[in-house]
Image 1 (tube, one colour):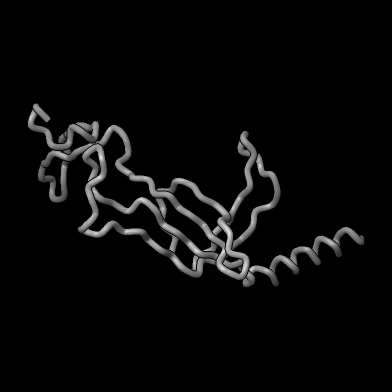
Image 2 (spheres, one colour; image 1 turned 90 degrees about the vertical axis):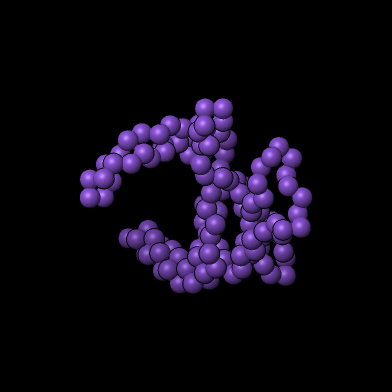
Amino acid sequence: MGDGNPYAAFGGEFHPCAGWKVERFLAFRASQPLIRMITLRVTRHDLNEALLAECQSSVIPARGEVLQLDALEADGGMVRPSTMWRIVAVTIHVPSLQSAPPLGGESLRVRTVEVSVLPDVSLLPALHAAAAEVLSESRL
């Protein structure tokens, strides 16, 4: 930050842009995306509560959305068919103002989001219909 650029730590540069009504201004272009990743934890929410998935994500899903969980091999190939899960609750872990600042000088931020899911039964009729269609075609 010795050069007076407060954004130097983000690894980018300023460049001239033509703005709205052809006014000129300087815009900051990051050399790498400024997206911060969070840990997304997916838990089955019923009698058999179980952790189904945990990964890094830049996306926070919403209640009511459907997640497609894929089981992948090391090369990215599918191990088995995907499963569909309906999100019934989203818990965002937000650090309070009484939290100690993280080591390394980072600011406080959301690091973990937990989603509770149930099997998506709204898709079952469509899956049964597709399976019945495949069976009827194989009988021909």
